[in-house]
Length: 135
Image (cartoon, helix red, strand yellow):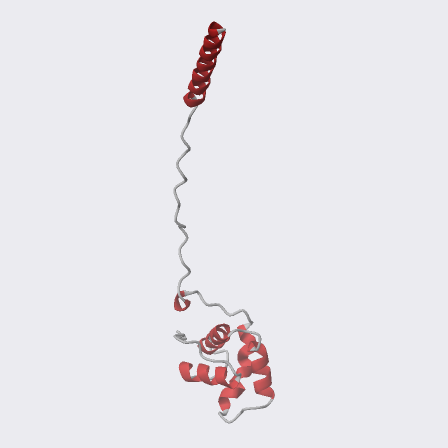
């Protein structure tokens, strides 16, 4: 009976050695984590560097010339027509449109650009965007 026990123990040790040898020989380390790539896209340029374009037809802004004729014009058809053209625009878009109209002389009068632009924006309850220059 002792020989049976020794044979069983030897068989068990042999199988354990064989099993652990096979398992450990197939060990492959985990691949390294992927290198984190920093995004290569550039941040958008600041507001003054953006190529500003007017989303409205600049020629239609000729109705705004009447607002510049008299500083006292607060309510009236010219204010309604002019302000309705830029009413759905953000302050910056409205400033770009009016600046384009003033520079293209669509309004038909020689104007001091910063003053005229500010006057038109204020009369339509818009604000001159900080740092915006009509160039």
